[in-house]
Image 1 (cartoon, rainbow, N blue to C red):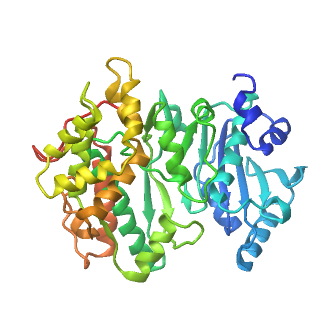
Image 2: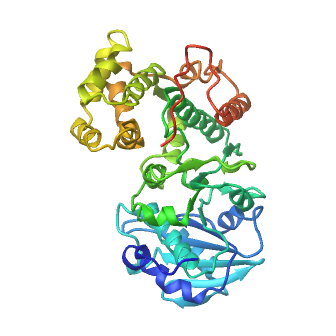
Image 3: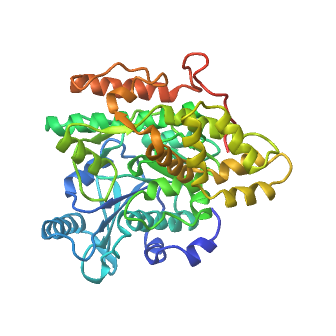
Length: 438
């Protein structure tokens, strides 16, 4: 491995410099942020994927103003996981259990609590930065740094699957939500998973290079690429989305060939949006409206126009809108104009010969894509019930509000199979021309 880098010297969290000299050689590295989590649940994350030489870094985190039950649970978990471990720095404990090196970082008590609005992003960053320091010190046998969550159960072969991937900057592992003893939460998780898969398949239908899942519990990152984008964003939520958005511009995001990570069904308020919040909302309302499928035809028209070589911005807008009939064409024009087209014009003007489509795709990234999708929704396309959306040709499911929970989980598995297809296989005329990845 290379010597310590500029990233470690200038951008990494201080725990990285403290911990690395105190840990011996390790084969694999996994970090898990933990807020209001039980110790037994955390230990179960890697129980099936345990390999020789595994180092697990658990960052127990909290912020000022946390409810008292959260504070108590964090304290109990910290006490259980650090029992018998050696303190190697203030708030950092190193121990071993069942052949696993366990590093516990206290960012939940006193002055060690995380700043508000940095939450899980900073907790993941602390763990991944420690992994960076270990790797740069020559103490890891792999460039892959894995991160997960307490609701995940990693499969056997999880770490070996990364070794079979070449040339990628990040891994988005396959996943599946597992039914729980709570019927309402199980059903809500199945519906939310259907939405997640619907969105990825809709992006594929549109031809987006950002058609992959962004779930922190299923993520592993390449060491060099992680440092190149200056680490995990310090965000209270969507840190995984923004990290992968930056990483994709450096290379491929790949789904390894391995059994899926099992995610437990549970409602949660740990972050302001995402799976936990969505599950709670579905349990409360019984429904879940999602983006209208026609939005992704409009998105595809814009991506087709962006892939053109040589056209200026106005011509690209006109080309995209000409591919749709009114009123959709007007909604698309207004949605595109809500973006920072000045930035696109500058990007195209500075693109080397033959590189305009690639540079345009870099500019129109996952964040800009989400903005356009939201604008199209709000300007006229609207939303539809989840079961209606899944009848779109790129999903092809015939479900209803009365579909049983078991059938919903089976539908999730069917969409997961579609995601694994090398290219869309929808009926002729529905799919869009394939585009080269970034």
